[in-house]
Image (tube, rainbow, N blue to C red; front, side, top):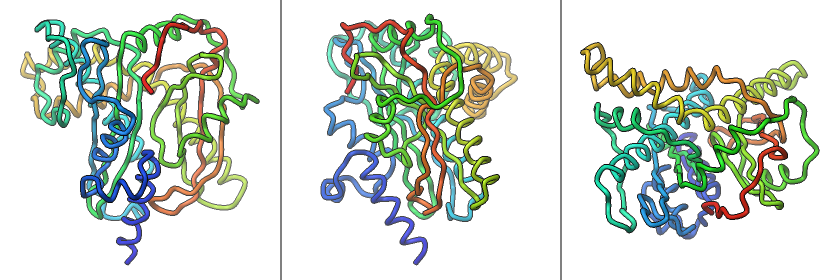
Length: 335
């Protein structure tokens, strides 16, 4: 009974979190995997998955799965969830990098190329493509998670375009303010109210009412008790996770090609097998990004119920102030 109830709660929360109505979801692909939900969300927003060479836009979906029999009793479940989100994001970003290199070398004809699931077996060829790419600016468009009673899955859709890359480069070249206090800014709250935060994963970016891009990382932590000490611990862990997720979003691309270069060298030298390469690659990228120094603020925080387990969690949103990042009024973001 408990397992059946958890699966029902998760399915409902996933449908709401992805912006799909319960009625339309019942008519959609079954079972309700995270990847199916993400693809349905993109389709509803009119976003093609694949390569649009005319617009120079790339959108791919990555996923990560773990064997979990019961999220309620799984130790460090939220940490596993966060790690899966990063791995799924890297899957999608790596596919974009490979697609970019393929498009450049093959001079693919204009039009949208539909793509199925992302590559599941990572061979030396994709690491060579990542190593040759110097992409930046890819952003998470949406994410979802699902659990069927045995397997937990996280799926993340990532988009890249020249305009997104230009925005990312402006951010990295700007002089950002420092600080660690919650900013009294209605723009952050307006965005937070528009998102199902308990089901949001990793990072996001959005444009505010003045046309400026804002970058946020989302972190969560279980509140293990009612004491002030336990609440403070949850607050600190959530804030740390939010900063790490934002740093991962901003730096994982530039870190990836450097890590991929070493992976290719190790494979060619026979020091690393292709079977172990992907796990080594993701581990090194996550570890390197974790050490990046990020300047910004906690811009929003709240307590909420995490639908999968019914437990109370603390959510922290860490953002970069856009005041010193010059906007481009010509750009039209992926919506």
